[in-house]
Length: 475
Ligand SMILES: Nc1nc2c(ncn2[C@@H]2O[C@H](COP(=O)(O)OP(=O)(O)OP(=O)(O)O)[C@@H](O)[C@H]2O)c(=O)[nH]1
Ligand SMILES: [Mg+2]
Image 1 (tube, rainbow, N blue to C red):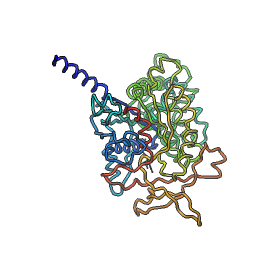
Image 2 (cartoon, rainbow, N blue to C red):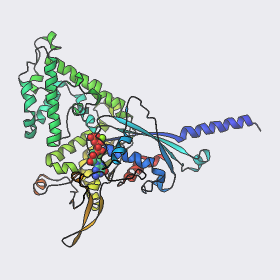
Image 3 (tube, rainbow, N blue to C red):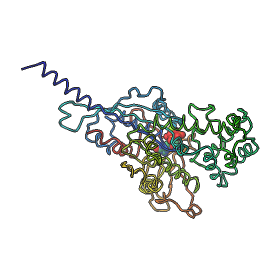
Image 4 (cartoon, rainbow, N blue to C red):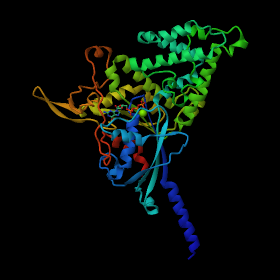
């Protein structure tokens, strides 16, 4: 028998096994600010790291079949990207009293190595274990709202902003920066300090739209979440009244240094170096995506806020089949094959309301989902609580047994007093205008739950999300 030949065949088989059994997957988690991205990733990582001994994942087939061997955090692939602060989040959750992980302001990533026993007999003979390298990426959904800018000139963008000011509540907030641009001689040589002042005032206006009006559809997205670009001249631009932006310059030579010239240049620079780069460096490289939507907070804020959230979420979804030309599509559309829509913070309502929440989310994303499905992407919609802060059960009210939730409200952090609430019904359809006049919503924020570092975080349906997003990778 030729042993050397035999051993070379075996080495090749080993190589082949290693090659095939080491899979990679890049999962993006997106959503508007406050949607629950950081809580979702923190819980997902926590469930996976504690997974092998964690009995909380019955809807994940791999865990149910005892084929999940465990997970380990390893070095992330892109060393120039911030690391997802898992430990910081867990420290906050385990502090006394517990607090939620801090808000994030940019792209971050984390890599987990997941070990499992392959299902196929053939692979099991070649190799007892297999690995999935899972990269999870957190990034602000607001940055995806800038995509339409790529098809606009500076003047067209100004027209778009002007038309958005028809909302009377915005007009009031906009009055300060509008007064500043009205008396600007846009063809004169620009004063850098004045430009920065107006850009700051415009940024303040965007922040007020977010905070006071609960608006999400903010442009340019980097103005409110600048990340590493805070203070950079590329963000020192602002929209002009459309008539001014369209007024031709008389002195072509001076145009480049004039206010209008600089605004046009910065707008183009922003498109080229901020928007396009974000898409090319991060967005198109994902395999799978989850879009998280907090449907409950906008219900609290009222009709306009809810409609704005819907518009912004569908705008994000438009990124998946963006571009009128095939070149734009190739450059900016990701090659994902699965997308999960999840209504977050489902523990704010009793379990019997979860199906309404799923239906409401389905209506919110209906338009965007059609585009996504057209691209051949498989979707699923669910309601989940990444980190369950309440207990759901029954309580007596006027002799009647009704569904209720119990937890510590954020406002009772000092006293640590538990409250039992009847949060009421979640509408199963998009609420109509008259509905808002009859009924208000009051979904109050809860303190993070008190948990042990030795146990996985409590949740609703993170395991269902894992099954949908990763399940087929563990064959
Ligand atoms: N009860 C409950 N509250 C949650 C849950 N997930 C998030 N929250 C609440 O929502 C807030 C925002 O959650 P984050 O995970 O920070 O949201 P984000 O999308 O990362 O927000 P940004 O980083 O600001 O964009 C938290 O501080 C909690 O108050 C959940 O599963 N249950
Ligand atoms: Mg975050």
